[in-house]
Image (cartoon, rainbow, N blue to C red; front, side):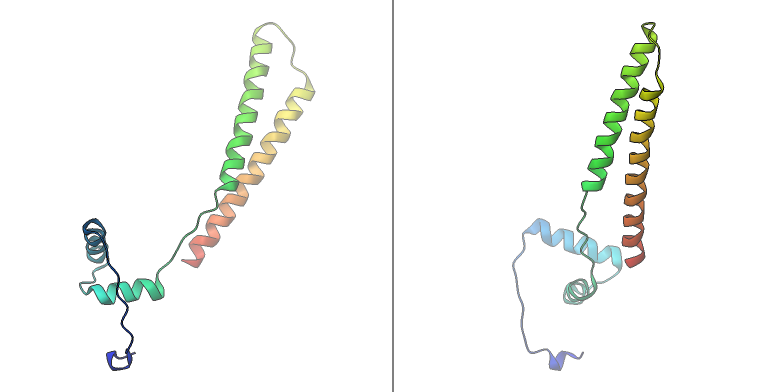
Length: 115
């Protein structure tokens, strides 16, 4: 693409802070021409939209397991017995956490491969 074929003008306004940030990013990547930087980012840049529902679900499951472990510990510390049902419940929830965590890691790996 040569400049002679570029006959459409695109312009927009920015704040001083946004301009400073643009120049900072330009310096980070070693581009001194603002037009070249903006064109490069618009055509080849990445937009990352994070869907954190899996991370939130993993956090929710961790809270549930933590509460269950604390309840079991209090029960045992007060002289009570621990039952295999309690252990199985905690194990099932831990398995769910591992599955969520593996899904998150797979999804993040896909993002890194695409970059």
